[in-house]
Length: 205
Image (tube, rainbow, N blue to C red; front, side, top):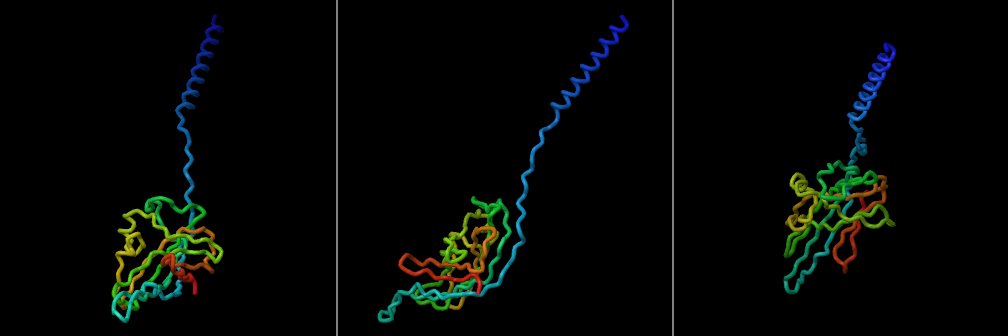
């Protein structure tokens, strides 16, 4: 009888121990994997200085002293590869792990104004080389970004920037390009209308 009591007690202890282990296993929180942050290279700014003259706005008729004629000088002041950004600043299309943000600082100088003001043409695209297709200007930032960065090109830039002869300004154009892009042969093109040839502006001298 004594042996039988001991066996019952041992079984009870074993059962209690198993239940405790099962309870502990059930209460363990599931492990969640933390997404790995993308490590991007430090920004690098290169001074350029390449420029061209744009006289596409020319309807001035000397005989009747009417119309307009402007002459603008566009200059790539500098450009920054791997420009820093926060994902929350974008409306959409945040640069992926295989892409980078390129910031190009373009200067505009009004050389001549007959009949109208000079304005910053925002129809710039970038080509990595002669064989690469154009990459359009990147403008998916939120309104808050443009308020905090007034020199960034927005959809309103071509109407908000007006210069008189002799005046200058600078604006930053943003492009999303491949992370490993070689910019040694890169150039910008300025679209001036379907009936005019695009102007080419090398990124590097």
